Image (cartoon, rainbow, N blue to C red; front, top):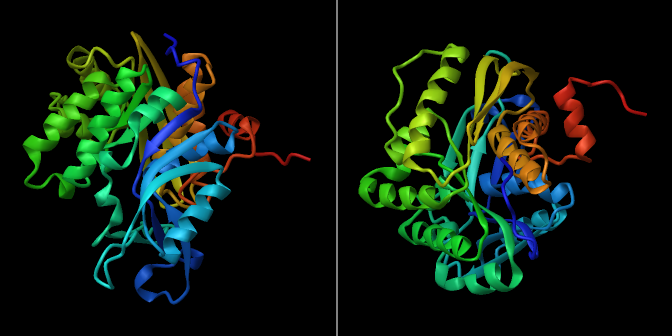
Length: 359
């Protein structure tokens, strides 16, 4: 089942996001005993956008910046280096205790020692994302967008960002833009906001064309009844996901694609990586196979980015999940949280298991 996309458009992909930076110790060391760190620009949603931007499609992020901040300048320069356009309000810092861009402090782990991530989001400027700061009629009507990708992380970040994502979805629907929604449930974001966020998530999901999430996401964000617990067995997980998605299809008939990744951790640097996608009445399963992992963070975003790129390029549906799987696998070989593919061939080589030197 092909997804019909707008023919008159400026942007292939549009994503709202809260940009930040990540501090990571060098050489796979842990945070608490390291004295040398690398600084990376990151956000889950811009990670998704990078697959398309590096492969030549026109992509834009909607965000917000701290005015005059050197970190904001770093972020803008990084987005430009990734071929990603940006639009966003400049917010006054408001003094040393005012706004700033979020920090993620994370090590990659190594061998038998797993990664640890500490999110430091106090004063996060992205929480001020407001629909009043963007001309949605211009963006969706005059400029035109083929797919808008929304994340539950942004929708749940603050009441303002929740309204922003709702209005983006409504405008996209009005102008014929397709909607992708990665549910991304986070318990800390939902605390004391269950009713508000459930209503918003269900409205977005009701008009979305692509829904991404694991079993917990569908159950806790959308109230879909889950299957009986199946432990860690991946075959059982696949069967359980199919059961749950059949229920989700009835609750959200507008969506034509449901997808999730499958991961079993053998060690920090060796994972079984798979994926499953429902497209209409068809199931496409990538049986988990072993991949070598340098840094796992961003692999799921790479999967979504590859899936959306394949849809945007008009590939056959069975290739959507394959390209997504391989894009996610590519990200785990990089120290950045986002994919930087040289070309489509590089990603298809990963899918084919061809790691031989190319001369």
